[in-house]
Each structure stands twice: as structure tokens, then as C-alpha cells.
Length: 345
Image 1 (cartoon, rainbow, N blue to C red):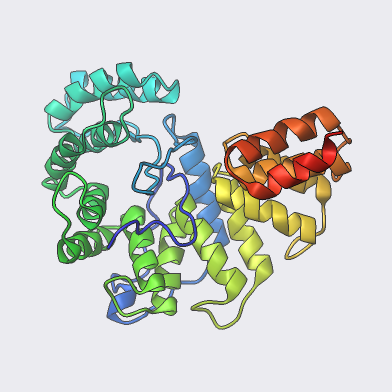
Image 2 (tube, rainbow, N blue to C red):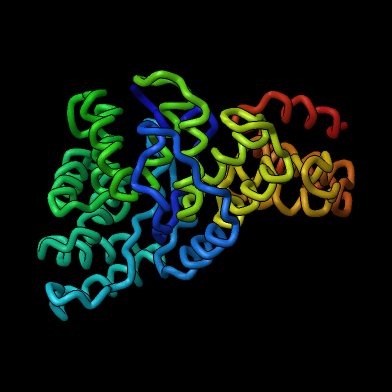
């Protein structure tokens, strides 16, 4: 069981708040469903956007799982947290917000060594992505384990992903599923999204689109951008739902795109270009193509280059067209190279 964030491409995982589900029954235990509460999703996304260390530029690791930049929630002032520990968390949060990962590592390490579970998770992510410190999956696994021992749900989920991919520990499908289910029961959107992918693709479990859709929904309502993207794809195709709903799909793509989920920006741009689920708007499509292109998405770079070449949604600009088409071609997109040849004398 590898690369379980793949299928519909996973994107950046952002800071989250928890929206308590109306029932503790999980989808695989009875298929109970929650309503698609847009207001709750908007509140979750808004709260995520205000967290100083919200992830906006997560980078996929070599195994294809995008974790997102480390997150450290605001200090809670809990009695067990010392003043020094809170200050270390604040300092780590500030360093993460400014992408000073080496400094963030030092402050988070101090808080983590004092057994702050959230700092331990963030430190594990720095090790896992090689940000501010040499990449070390073993160290990441150790820090996640220390946080999991304190019943941190996201730590359990991240351990599950490492077991699934055999990173920092031997591959163990059963242990991965056990950890992901326990994390999902604890409200981890990371786990809910990962389990949703397993059920959608039938990886290690009986394939079930309706269970997948419900898991994506629960994580999406917490503001998880990857889950919002996956839920949007379910609505666009109608998988696991009573019928497809492109308008609803566009809503969830927009929610993810607003959190800089690259694939959501690309797909929403395509919908604006087609006028599917949203009013046709080439200018808005071009803006979204640019957002995804600037984050390195080759297909978005190709579409942006075409938009400049054809004056589609923005002013025609041959120089910009060549620039973006060249970027896409350099990334290996043959269609961009073919189109580029038509522009050159």
C-alpha cells in the first residue's frame, strides 16, 4: 500500500480546526452521512488562513505524499505548558511563517524536548521534508511516535502514512490501517483523507465510493485542502454520491484553490474556461492558471502560455507565451514543446 495520496493528486495540507462530527460512528461502521455544510467549511478555511504558520507551499516528498509545511497551533495556555515552552512555540511559529526553517527547527526542538506534542509533530515534519535540517525519516518517525504517545491524532495519522510507504519503518499495511483508523476516530483530517483514498481506490480494503466520499466530506469540513479537492472530484464524477453535481464540485475546488492547492486551481481554471458549474470566465481562468503555474504545475504553465499566445482572458503577449510554454516544455510536457514550435519562426 504505497502513495495513498495519489489517484486524484494530493495537494498542500493546511492548518485545520476541528468541526465535531454529529456522530462518533465512522463511515466504515455504518455509512452515516453528514450534510455538506458550506458554512462550516468556510469557517474552517477562514480559521486555517489566520494561523500564522498556515501551509502555502507544501512540497511532495519522493514518495508522492504531500505533507505541507509544518504547523504549530497557537499556544493554548494549558497549565502543563511552561512559559518558556509557550515562547519556544511562538518563536517556532514565527520562523515557520517567514520560512526560516533552520530557526524554526531550533525553537521547535526545544519545545518538543519538553514533550509538547504539537511541537513534536511539527519537528517531525521538518525532518520528513528536510526543511531546516537534513531529511531523516527515522527521526521523523521517532518524533511522531512521541506525539502519538500523547494521543495526538495527526501524529497517529502521519505514523500510519509512514507505515504505508515503508519510510522510517518497515512497510506494514495492517499497522498503517490501524493507525489511520485510530487517528480518524480522533478527528484527524489527514487520516480521514488518506482512508478516503484507500476506499476510493480499493487499496487494502473493499472498494467503496460512498465511504470514500463521506471520509473526504468529513476532512473537507475541517478545512483540509487535499480532502476538499478529492471531494470535489467525487462530485464532478458522481462517484459515491446519488448524482454528479459540477456546481458543487466547483464550490469545493474553489475552497481548496483558496488555500493554494495547485491541482484545485488548475481544475477550477478549466471549469471557468469551459463554463462548467461556473459562469464562463476566461479572465478568471487565466488568473487561476497563473497561480498554479507559478507553483510549478506544468499543465497550468502550458495553459497560461496558450492564453498569452491567443489573448484568451488576458492581453496577447508573445514573450510571456514563450516564457510559460518553455517552462512547461522543460518540465517534460510534449504538448507545450509542440505548441512552442508553432510560435517560433
